[in-house]
Length: 631
Image: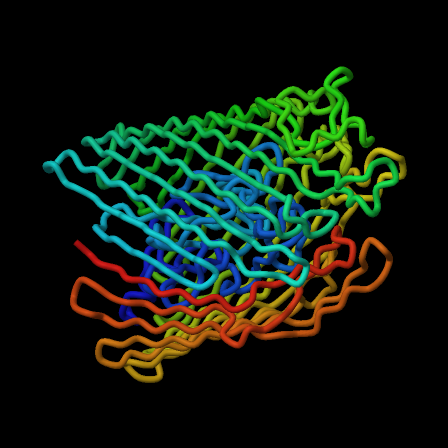
């Protein structure tokens, strides 16, 4: 896109009104498909590393699953809301979208929008430290084939068809597979993924369906690396929407959506060498299904004085329907896991009914009301006032207000003062779990955060920049704490209250019409409540030469120190990863793209407090070649 187009990109995620990045009442970062193609990444989660204030790494419990770091918070508990086309992926058992959808391939993506900071006033629970909305391709005809190192293979197909003025349809399919690289611990990190989505529009009626499956095996679990570690997740989604009223001043829409999330996982809990009761490794994990039925009513009206009113009601019935176990030690008579050789099953097996998990079969019934008023006081000043009330039956109720004043004294300068509150409701795993790793705490309260932001955005002829100062007051954060008994390692507690402040900066400079540089930098002023990166930065350079497009990118992370389970200290010094992309336009409809991840094969670890030595191996160099064709 041209520089002017980038500055004028429309975003809906921040306000339920169509705004530009300058006029939106939130701090927002947007990646369109052209920019994504330059970054050398494979998954939507990897884009977080190029967003100020966010990072994505691998960690414990199925280590290939992404872990979110947002504004100095790394608690691995669903503090970032992930959506696909405005529909939440976070669910009621673990709360983390990445557990159930750990791989969202970039081949299906039209754009990705990030809210940096609170979003509960619009989206409720989990829209806490940030929101990521993946917008998929729905109006292109494109096929892409990919081959790469470590037996990486991929095929994606997107198509749409307009039957007449009133009826059109689209479909997207993406299949990805790789064997993964060899690690010194004797394992690989293989991946298999399939994503399918289809939609039909008939006048004011919209029908959508989605299916996703991901398998991640080997790599790491709580007790270490093992070829027996396994993870499989599936998602099914269907929705029906109808526009009852839509004209220049008023819109009234309704939507009914239903989703299912399945997970089957088993990871190393106790290695044979450390098992005093049996001579085999002990593997254990969930075989769970959660569902979510949601009804939305949205109303929008532009008043005669140009004020814009948004209001709505949302009903959600989220339920954990099954809570089985996958294990290789089991006594079918008592229905218990017994770590003795007599009860060793020889391999991991699934037991759909597991008495200690019975309490996890809980229901979260939520009623939500929300409203927002956009008030254009003058040509230079716009105010947004909004709030959302969520009542989670028998769990908690939260009011999430927000306020934003946007002042644009000149076309080149925009100043924003923003305040918002967000929350995260505890999930079934935190409330009611009872396994060999954790025991739940039914007395948990919702986490909440109060955020104030001061934003300065400057736009010139060839460059633009954003500077954000934020202040977070964190309250009642839920974290794992040691459980001092013989059956569980951890429990959960509302134990953390803290203040987190920082600076986020990003800028793009078009040095010439063909050469541009984009940079980000994040600096936290306070020590994070759990060790995470206190300073991060990125740089993206791109150069156009006739039919060629070249990009060299860098991701820098500061030093991290943290205690391990053995009371030792983990330390990873600062490091930088490089990405390289070159794209050749064969003609107007086809192109070749060559991507290298971790160009110089940097060896590094990321920190996770629940891994014995604190270290999770990073990804080494990966190479891929893509061929794309429009039709």
